[in-house]
Every structure is written in C-alpha cells, then in structure tokens.
Image (tube, rainbow, N blue to C red; front, side, top):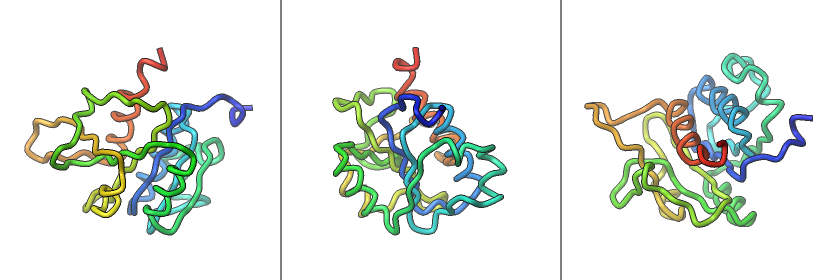
Length: 160
C-alpha cells in the first residue's frame, strides 16, 4: 500500500558513497519524505545488505532504487525522465540552499562521496550546484545530514 502512495517528484543520486550506514540513512530519509527513487552509483553499496539495513530500518523495501555503474549514466537516466539534476556541493557560482527555487517540479539531487564530494564531470552536466551555507571551520556535513537538510528545505512548503 505504501508503494502506491503518490511520491514527491524527487530522485536522489548517490555518487560513490562509501559508507553503508550513509546509504541506509539515505533510504530512511527518502522514505520519510516520500521520495520517488534513489539511484546508487559506482562503489555505492546496494541492498540487500545488513549494514545498510542497520540505518534503513526497512526503507530499502519501501523506496524504489536502481543501481547504475556511473553517475553520468544516472544523469542521463533522470534527464530522459525530464528531471532536472542539481549537484549538492560547495562550488563557485553555487546557489545557496535557502535561495534555491526550482522552475521544475521534477528534481534529481546528486550527493557525492564522503571525502571527494560530487565528481567534477558530474557537476559539469548538472543544471546547477546547490550549497548549504555553513559558518563552522570544517565547512562539511555528513552526507546523511546533508540529505535531510536539503530535502526538508526543498519540500517543506509541499509537506505543509
């Protein structure tokens, strides 16, 4: 029944995410926000996996997911579905998350590797880069935290 519920027109793309706990957290957060799909790319772990399940808590069975070998393949996949891809990264000319307004309801959000972020060749084919403003000295958030912040900010008006 849950799988038939209307989902938010958002696809998450995980670009070579190393931590299986982070992958599981992405599933759990995607479930909480009724995200349409997660695309797992490159070395990103895939279900079934007990390490992913530790944090997913069953969300791997409620959230549609796909594995693609490269993130560039994932970008092509979402573009063919008329989704507009945005990288979540710190970059020159990025859009601050609190100022981001989409002109398209169908978004694909690319979240990168915990150490290296989103690969430059992926950023180059995205419609833009969204950045979370940060004031601390590390200028870095865990990917699972980042996914939650970005989804909340982008979807909060729709969630009412």
